[in-house]
Length: 112
Image 1 (cartoon, one colour):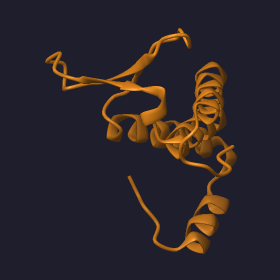
Image 2: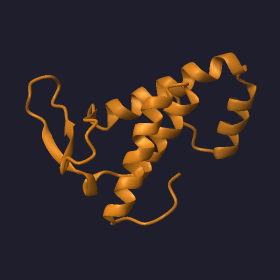
Image 3: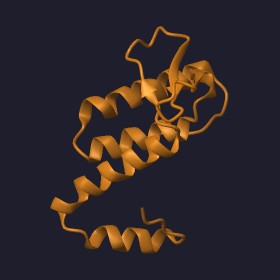
């Protein structure tokens, strides 16, 4: 994964990508961010108090997280990249979780 230290360089590089190449890039970024966050497995029931399981590499040794512990910026980023990759249902789920996370409180700001 390529990371840019300069926002202008990132924007220029992105603008040079053909439109057909952008979706796979967004999908790769979304997958990378999910993996980096500990292979978050999203359970579709928003009524669960503990809705995320941070995977432990398949060994079943992960830990449960409450909605309030999730980073709203991560949820927003995942929603954006999954949406731009054309995975609208997955994007919508992260948008819903970002909204639910905002209602729980904690870190404030604009994320979507």
